Length: 595
Image (cartoon, rainbow, N blue to C red; front, side, top):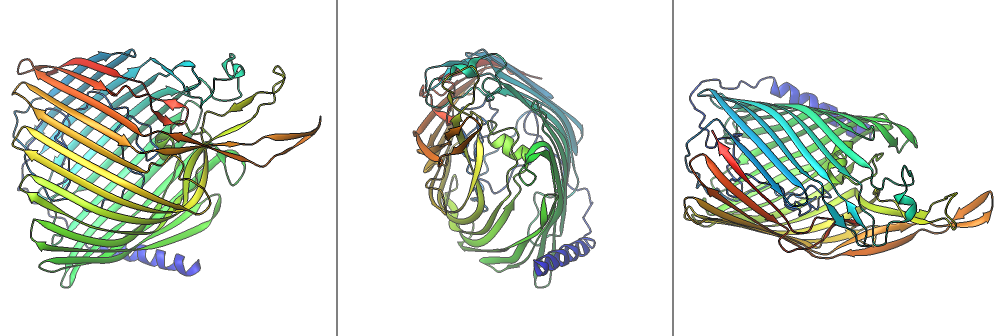
């Protein structure tokens, strides 16, 4: 441990010394061109992406990075480090100051969104964005109970971007306020004791809110090549709070530096992270308290480039100070090689790296909002990650990517529900109930993932995106990778029928998953004592999910448009988490006005 710690500190200070020599170019030679009437972004030039659009609302398909935010599926172990070659079909559009959208739908759904941009000069933009989306409908649980399942999402942000000659400075201040309740219960009818007013056996029916505000300041050169000197930085601070009185402070400062030299290019990513959570059940102390962590990290590499191939060789290092345990040092390799046998047509890549994952409070809360609010989750360590594949172009308008990944991860968290006899003075015999907030268990796993992506743009009217993943899990102790899918697939299609009418569809498929209830029963010995029987693991199947969403937009005039969206058009009441079904078919319709 001492040797690892010594090397991490030595590496960190060497990187800082190198960074002191960076001299960014400040010559003004470029202008900003805003291509839409709302928040501008700098596109990733090497990303397979969908046709730009505004989401009228959010799809009900669950992420299976354990997040139940209603968005398209994304993978927990996503390690897609190489994107396919660019397809550029961006069209110039008349710019305006902003956009207002409003709509309503079933399940008592209300939606409103506002965008405003002010081009202060040819090189800068100032903007405001606000959004509200809420629903107050009921859903039917597996046991037959019809329960309230409201949610609301509110966003307010102010942003500023300034374009220098080779870098973009962006400042973003935002506030998010999300509300929901713990409405779920698995398999059976909700026990009567949980329906009593002011019951405290579980969180059944309790309202929860997540409030998160912060600032993000970033300097980035999005067009830099490997032969260019670069100095990027990113500072962010977030404050997160819940209605159940948990609080978190998260701050991070990161520098990204590259400097060409005679034999290649020096690459360095280094920084500092501080996170503190209060009002949690501290696992080390076995009591309600706080936890604070300070992370130092450095990821240096040396990059070499030839005519048809390149390679970078380095490592990733972390040094962590935790108020609950001894200091830790982690290190992984970071090696990647690319080979392009046919320029701008096909690229082959292979690499090995790793990651130390900070499972801080707000990260877990957003991944699974129905986790026990007192949670204190261990960090995970991806000690080795091997990857390889190829990507490129089948034609000028068709991109593809095929990849395979193999990861070895320690302390991967999995979520489960706990069942037990509740000692009730009013109910005899004592009722058997299930907590409807999730606990966390851990296992060391090996994950094999196969990935396919395909993107096609036909003329200026049709965009097609197809992606799929297959997963194979090898666990050390657990019999299943709880809540993780066997496979997933996504199909997105956008078609412009006329100059006024555009339609699109998104189809999300999630393979079968296994969910867990751990049953701990107690054997009665005497009025004063009892002992726990061996824990029983109950496995439940979460069926394959099919989620179909259809949207359309009609341009009535140059400024007015009508839109509509049909969500979960397959009428499937699938479960995001065990006991938590989604809304069935739902729609949203409304109008927009640009100015």
